[in-house]
Amino acid sequence: VVIGAFQNESTSLDSAFMKSFRTRIEQEISATGKFEISDRTAMRELEQEMALAEMGITDGGPSDGMVRSIGYKVSGSVLMFHLSSGYSADMQVVLKITDIEKQVVSDAKGGIQEISVHYIPRSQGENVPDSILLNGLLSECAEKIAIRVVEYAYPPKIIAVGDNDVTVNIRDTQTEANALFDVYSPGEELFDPDTG
Image 1 (cartoon, rainbow, N blue to C red):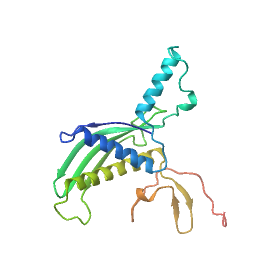
Image 2: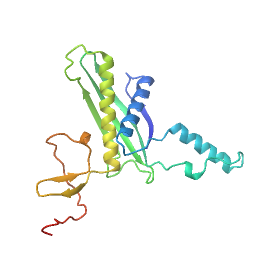
Image 3: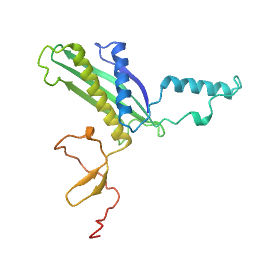
Image 4: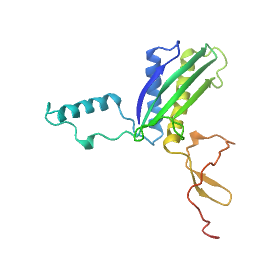
């Protein structure tokens, strides 16, 4: 995964906030254990070196094996940010997940998604420092983005059916108690080993 630019369409955010947001997204996606994060700057430098080598300007460059293919690009826009000083924070983001191989953003898997976060610190009461509100908001929003990226690349699937339970390939951070799931496409046919 490469993390692209997140545009600031909110009038109340600065570049330091956006950089911090991008860093949180990198951390959360990396923490899923499903992806490696590619550095955009390093990739750009490798591409430039390869182009110079192809033109004969430099002797050699990175070999093909050094450049790994990128599967997905994650980018988007922060549409809204609101801080209710001392109490809560809100953020609305449009997330764009590009399948690099297909070069598509808008598809049936949901390459363009809207994420809204309303953050109120637990057991903090009122007069919460703005720094706690901002950190909590960024963490929660970045976690939601990471979950959406995992669900996009690895859609949830039923992997086993028992007498009283069903096993699904999703992480605990992707669900909550009493969650309801729609099963919208059939997977591999399964047979009970005892009854056939």
